[in-house]
Amino acid sequence: MSITWTRRQRALRRFWADFRTHRAGVVGLAILVVAVVLALAAPLFIDEGVTNVVRGTGEKLAPPSLDDPLGTDESGRSVLLLIWWGSRTSLLIGFLAALLSMVIGTVLGIAAGHFRGWIGAVIMRITDWFLVLPSLVTALVLAAILGGSTATIVIAIGVTSWPSTARLIRAQTLAVEARPYIERSTALGAGHWHITTRHVLPNVAPLLLASTTLEVASAIVTESTLAFLGVSANKTSWGTMLRGSYDWGAATSGAWWYILLPGLCIVIVVLAFTLCGRALETVLNPRLRGATR
Image (cartoon, rainbow, N blue to C red; front, side, top):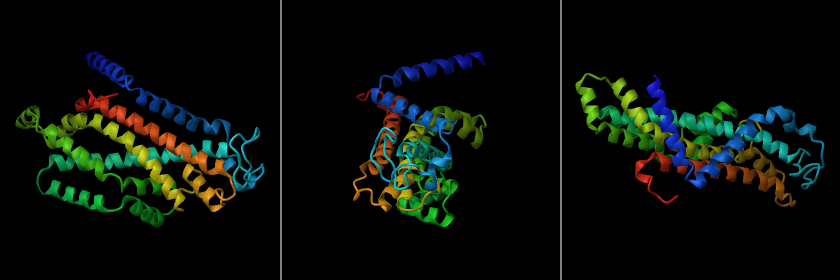
């Protein structure tokens, strides 16, 4: 047990030593850490009452000032507090939707790569069918049918964004199962469960980690788009703030802070996830380790 733990510590140290050489990835990771910490700490400093439209205390669509550093919205609520509280919804939906997408894509991808017969063929045809569907439109229809809640938005995004992951994991599974030790394991009597969980899954996990990081960014953008189109989780998020700025004509009334600041939060967090994901992909993929950093 101590030998295994020592090996894991060495592997983590090597991973961090390689990762920190990617400056863009380190910057992205730092931004994500700050964003997650602020989202988790939000209930310690503010309460959900900041989202109540009848509790706005400031002037409507007031520009940034000392009292309201980021201005106010159409109800006199602080945009700063709304952005801070809305980060909880945007990040939560992003993480959960990406997790659901990764679970579905990993299970189906490994199954399609491991079972070469009709099972794999059926899975790939289903995957191809989902790939040709416009994911945003499908997610919009699902969210509208299932209703507006955090769970339904997560499901709508998760079940429409897994096909690319499934194809990626299937290709990696085929590469892993072509190695000699898989044939030896099969000859020694290893079953499907043993091969997929003990050999295939650990080998595809690094690639899956990098893909998950990128998928979170995509899920945040999709959630914001759905909220802007009117299908939200009935909670304040960066997407619902953009929708509110559009409904109340913030652009025509000159309330640039109400439009620009939530949009910048989405751009910065998505960019951070992308930078971090690209760095992870470069570190964990041997073919990319020599790439320009």
